[in-house]
Every structure is written in C-alpha cells, then in structure tokens.
Length: 325
View 1: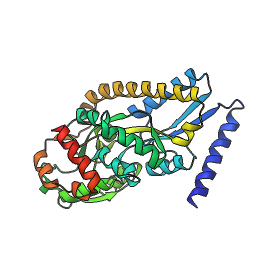
View 2 (view 1 turned 45 degrees about the vertical axis):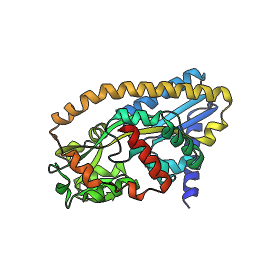
View 3 (view 1 turned 90 degrees about the vertical axis):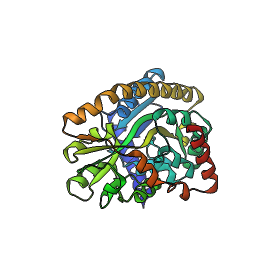
View 4 (view 1 turned 30 degrees about the horizontal axis):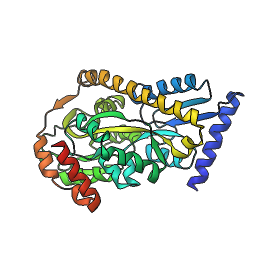
C-alpha cells in the first residue's frame, strides 16, 4: 500500500512538471528538506541547484522543497529508496538501517564541532559513508554542520535531577531514547514538523535541537529556556539515491560531485555567519539561556548508550573516545 502511494505521488509530480515545461531536463531531481527557506541547509541546496543547472547547461535541474512539504524525514528516505524523490538531508536517523550511523549524533560522545570534523574526515567517517551507500542506498555528497544540540523547556534545567517528569520530544533515533531515558526524562518521538503544535498543546514539555532549528521553528513562542546541554555536536548529510546517481553519465556525475563540494563549503560559510547571530536573536525573542552542570549529565548518562552497542560498535566507540581525549 505504501509503495503504491509513493508511486502515485511520483507520477503526480512528474505530470505536474510536464505540464509546466515541454523542454524537460535530462535529470529532474527533487529534494525534500525538513528545514524552512531561511535555514542554511535550504539556502545551500538552492545554491547547489543554481550551480548544477549552470554547469550542466540545463541537463540537471534540482527542485528543493522546504519544511517537509513532500515528506517527513523518515518518509523522504523511503521515497528515495523507492525512486519517488531523489535527495534529502539525514544522519543518525539512518541508524534504523545500519548501526554505524549511531555515531552521527551520539549524545555525550563529543565535546566540540572540531571533534565531529575529525571523526568525519577519519576512518569512522569513511566507514559511515560506505555503509550509507551499501546498506541504505543513499549516497552522501558532503556534510553540513548542525551545531550543538540544546534542550529547551519552560522551566530551567541545570542538573539531571531537574528532568524528573519532563516529557521531551526527540527524533526517532534509538540513541536519543536511550540517553534521555537514562537521564530520567520521559521521551516521545515526534516528527519535527509537529513539535511546535505538540508544545503548544502540552503534549510535550520540552524539545532538543540546534539553535538554528529552534529559531527557525519559532520555539521561542512556546518555550522560555534554552538549557545549554551541548549533548550532541551534530551534522547532516545531503544525500542522493545511489540508483539515481549511478543512472547519470560520467560527465554529469563529475559535475554533480564538484557542485556538491561547493555546496558544502557554501553552507559552512553560512553556518559560521549565522551561528554568531542566532543566540542573540533568541534572547531578543525572550528566551533565557541557562548554564547547566554538563559533567553531571555526562556522569548520570554513564555507559547507557555504550551498553546497547554490538561488540563491534563498542570497539569503534572506544577508539573514538581515545582519539577525542
């Protein structure tokens, strides 16, 4: 049933494009993003689309849909796998397909974005990229910084003991469930597009995200505090379906990858510029920033995630901790 819906959706999109233009490009790519149009990831994809169309002389056209207009993240992944759409951004959500992806946004594994960069350019990063292709059918074509993830709430959270009774929205990532349950919170996975309404209606009391996503979703209208937990230093991968990529001739593959590298550099520049401004903007909207006892969070979390890993992944975890320390 789900496959039939995806195929019908794909035919509808194709038909809509055919009605708009009789001069179809050789490759029409459709990207579904969870972020809104003012987010750095969307702006990077827009830049990418301009580069692709120019460098390929119109043979590749990219249409980018923001704010989960086409699908929520996990559905977008499945739609790429079935060939209905072509691109999205994703990372740790792929741990539902392959365990190595757990390291993409593992709580309390890293202490800075520099640690994340080191991992991504090292052997673990190479393994992640390889298994994304072989086990999920998605090809990463770069990575975007997401920044540190922090907890927002309507009461200050300075210590893990303050989490008692707090219902926190988390993405559908097993490591996040493990971590926040170990810390004493009550977790509930909810799609990002539903978080604001869920907070407004009191279904949940708190959520955790990087500051740019917190600002983009106007969480300041329903949350008072940003608790600086820095529990994850994350990133996302812009991905394309491997089958779609392989269907391109060699010259277009090369153009695609070259443009993707420029997209990554462009997004990094936007991220660094935006990072300076975001906290001030949230404070101006009335949010209070709270320093937390991060050491207490790390201590209470302990080996919660490590204990859920397979023996092979435990070895990867220990090698990463040794490298970071």
